[in-house]
Length: 352
Image (cartoon, rainbow, N blue to C red):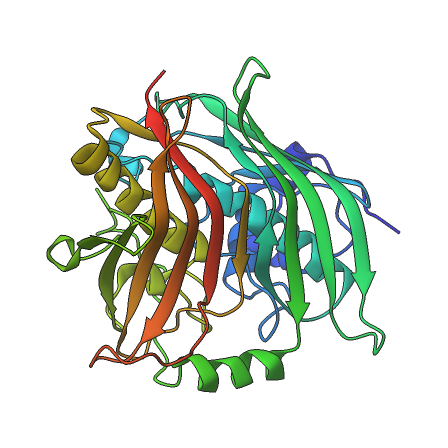
């Protein structure tokens, strides 16, 4: 049975009163409730948590029920309150909010820890407007929920959209898939993918200003053409426990957001579009599919970005038909033979 509270009624409650609510039955969440969930203070200490701010960019959930999720985020009026460098394209930061909301929904269905698994076509319809006071809306519609046979965990599938104040599409993503895993599954994955050090997460955002999403070491970029004259590009990025996203994503279970890896891949493709194809001001356009089959934890290592079969299409866009992200040790040897992230038809092009 869901519980009816308006956002205004929730705003009138103090922390102790908010913690006493059953978060799995609420239809609406104010900003403080979302923060408490990220801090693990809603009875979810060892289970799924939302990221902490500034990675969490959802101010409230206006409706969450068995079929839909509707939430909003308003860019701060004071630029000092906005943590990120707005000269950087941040579509994937907001794509990450769609994944987080689906995981939040799934964690109400089954105890466990949410991890994004894949998504289908993702398309940008217009650039994000970072004007102070502007509000964007996250709108998600359930396609299916698949409960695991052992009743522990499951998988949620939603279609997601981000809308501007006029209700016009900014970004849409089909088939956002998030799995709800058992805590033991996450521990096993940490051993497999290099996450045994542990990181003390810090919710303190006093120094979180003009943050840039980690991309890659520009000095590591190499380009070559294979026997079929296909352009292939590589670059690497070091990973260690001091990487700033690990402070906020997730509390006591730090992992680099998968969509930050996606951001790095897009940034690399943009550089290729400028250097190899003379695209003056490349922006992200779309990708057909992304799959996350592993995670980037905090132990020292490096990740390798790999763009394959990069070419220009008939519309003048630059497309990587296949893109992969690999985990490597500090000596550059593969930790896992297969890529942990894969992408199909990642596309950038001239700004409209």
